[in-house]
Image (cartoon, rainbow, N blue to C red; front, side):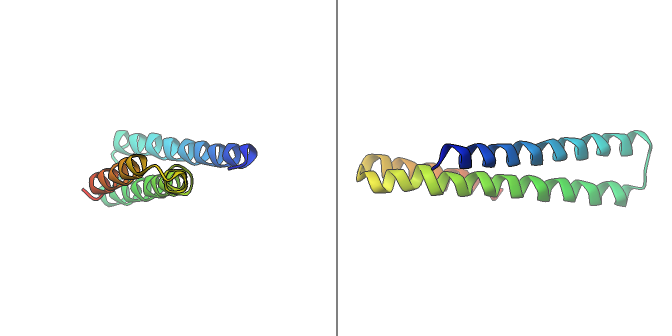
Length: 95
């Protein structure tokens, strides 16, 4: 992976996380202001969806680089380790 491409991805991820952080602060204000429950729940769903998109991007990068490297290296133990890690994290993400 080109270093500038990796930096661009990191910058985009951090920007997205900053927006999510703002959404969460907005949720806290909504609770403090005793806003309508359905509006709060709707915003919670939006935050969860945004977090899922960040998670997907990070996992996509992991597969494209770390897992792909393990596969191309020919190191069977590393390949098994990377696949096991991926399966474990996917199993936890589904809960």
